[in-house]
Length: 277
Ligand SMILES: [Zn+2]
Image 1 (cartoon, rainbow, N blue to C red):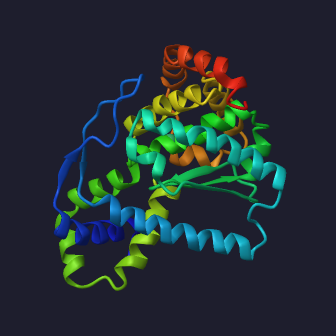
Image 2: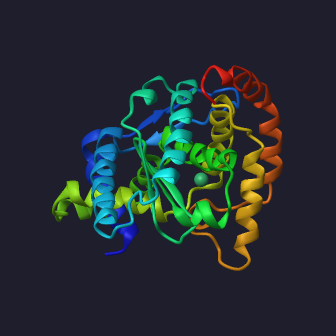
């Protein structure tokens, strides 16, 4: 069974019980993200799937001795994430109470991700091959957190369910085994393997730099981050680029929006001494 057929099947089975709705997952923030989204699966189900998949993946990493091996590196990443998370309230009130979690995985791949509901991972390959600064790491994690705030994985699953309703219902009728387990696998698969649309990428870029700026990280680091990614793309394309496809206008959009959020960064940086920056 193909991956996307499976997505349609599971998502449609869920759709049958929850219906289709138009939602605003976030407030628009200073960067002004305002697109309405159509959802056909519930956050609760998607987040439960994410939680299950994440638990299994981290246990697997632990078994292989690849989980959080370098305490200094882990502390560095956790510190950055702990400064970004409180800033999510600029986009949605509930997000500061999500069970956010981040781990560093020893894997020679340029990648980082955030599953629905705030379960994150960053690979040592990204940190090392990009020789990333704290500001650049904040840009990566801010971008990933933004995808979760906008519930892009839930939206991708919903789109699949809506366009393939017929197949999905047929699949649902024939039974799909352990729905909980399938849903967990799908959420992980969509998060780690399915490319986001250009519109989703632009939203994550803009929200990501606002989160970084509010947390006291230079939002312009998003520009150098993408330049480093694209430089690597010539020799060994970063895995990250396959799920976050580059587009020609990205750098100019990041320049425009980092200028827009610069006052937030300056205000945060000014208050930074007392905040333990
Ligand atoms: Zn992205």
